[in-house]
Image 1 (cartoon, helix red, strand yellow):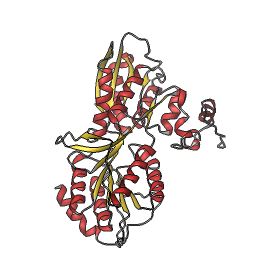
Image 2 (cartoon, rainbow, N blue to C red):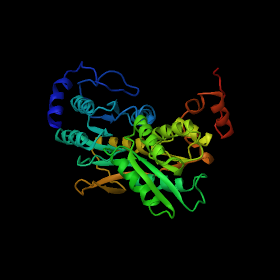
Image 3 (cartoon, helix red, strand yellow):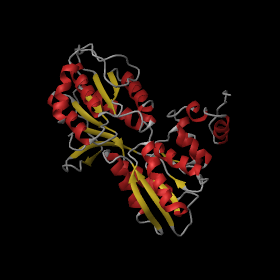
Image 4 (cartoon, rainbow, N blue to C red):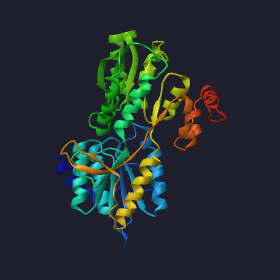
Amino acid sequence: MMRKRILAAVAVATMATTALAGCSSSKSSGSPTSTAAATNNKVGILLPDTSSSPRWVSADPNELQKECNVYKLQCEVLNANGQDNTQEQQAQQLISWGAGVILEVDLDAASGAEIEKLAKSKGVVPIDYDRLTQGGGAAYYVSFDNVQVGKDQGTALTQCSQVAGKSSVDYTEIDGAPTDNNATLFAQGYNSVLSTQSGWTKLDEQTGQWSAATAATVFAQQLGKYGSKIGAVMVANDTMAQSVINILKQQGLAGQVAVSGQDATPGGLDNIMAGTQCFSIYKPVAGEADVAIKLASEILAGQKPSAPTTVTDPSDGSKVPAFLATPIVITKANVAKPVTDGYETAASVCGASAAIAKLCNANGIAYTYTGS
């Protein structure tokens, strides 16, 4: 069925005037043209959605396009808005456009692998960006050490003020989407820490599907069942953590339960400053985007770059050459770092209200609130 969908997209893709279905582009407009450059300097970039994390809306597209300009590459940054058939069509369009390299953040392993296999059959080099596509056979994998991300989450959770020094802690867990290999790696990391933590007992574990709505439903069920027994919530990212915090606020419990996060989103940073979220994990996008675009430029120049390490594809045991960046734990002590680094803007973090602006200024983020 997946192959039929891809083949069906060919007719759409070969029409040069066809608009790119369901996509967004960073600093580019319209569809890729059908005329290939004499020397291939074209890179196609497939992003997954606009809801699981704000990074796919601004941080990654902006940094990727900036690096494309540095290396004088033509880059098309497309977003599938959570639809695998849209991502398949976008991939076919990029291949028809003449992309020599495609960077892909898959929506699921099955559709992602089909895209990468098709790309290779057309002489296009696929690179897994941020997420490893199981069974896809990508030439390279550029990401963070995602098991380490999870370990950092687990360790940081045990150090939160709400639980530090306690002889026993009951906690629940809300994981990312099981279709995302990263979610599996994050869970592997934090479970390796929490399962060996003396006195820590897991009451419940469910997937939040990287969805704020799903996470809200899951945590409402957990809180309804276990109530005040819950001392901590191991939440895989900031988007889902916000849902947990909203429910805790409704029950007058916000700040009393240790809540984790990831992605250093504006909302996550606000919650850290307010004391309702203990920490987030900051993954500087330059650690991925800059490496990935440099790698693409070398491939297009006919080089075969060597990678510093490999990761194992769990679907077939193959070794994928990998570039893995190091994550950073963000707490109240260093909450300003994503802003001072330029990953987030002061306005996005501080501009929602005068109260948040006051928190920002008290925590090293200079901002003048001009709203009403």
